Image (tube, rainbow, N blue to C red):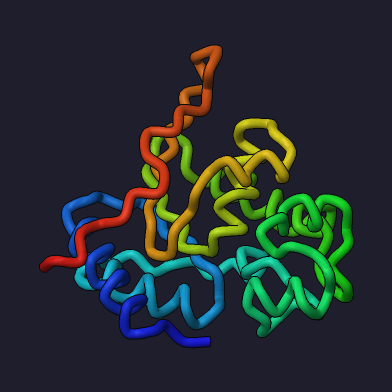
Amino acid sequence: MALSPLGQRQAEALGRWLKDTKLDAIYASPMIRVQQTMAPSLAGRGVEPEILPDLREVDFGDWTGFNWEEVKERFGVSAYDWLQVLERAEILNGESAEGLLKRVLPCLVQILNDNAHRTAAVFCHGGIVRKILALLLELPLAKMAHFRVEYGSVAVVELQPNKSHAVEIEMLNFCPSLEG
């Protein structure tokens, strides 16, 4: 699914916001929305993104294509509780939290190993942002429901292994201004 006109404006705003940020590496999901979101941020950088297929969005199985209300009507479960449902592996023909872990963890390990003392950007999806945060903070995925992740938003995490609190979330759910 491609970006909406609002999504395109959010991608352009993100590109403007990131334009002066030095990025040593860029990683991205292969999905078209992510590619379209990332495009304005790549302009003039000279850094080629590394596409990691396992950064793709959560597979919602039989829920795919339905809005929140339709999920409730058809499947008798609140889609707003999707993280808990994912943890219990209760999305018909969908991904489980365990399956998500098995594919996202190697991506995170690769990104961290390849970028010690460097700045890397990861363009992905809200569910993947939540999973990465859960891994970094050593929390169950279901707890990530407490964190809001908007479309086109930025999360900035700094890793400082020499500190007892090695993971510092410097920014979460920041949405750059759409005014150019």
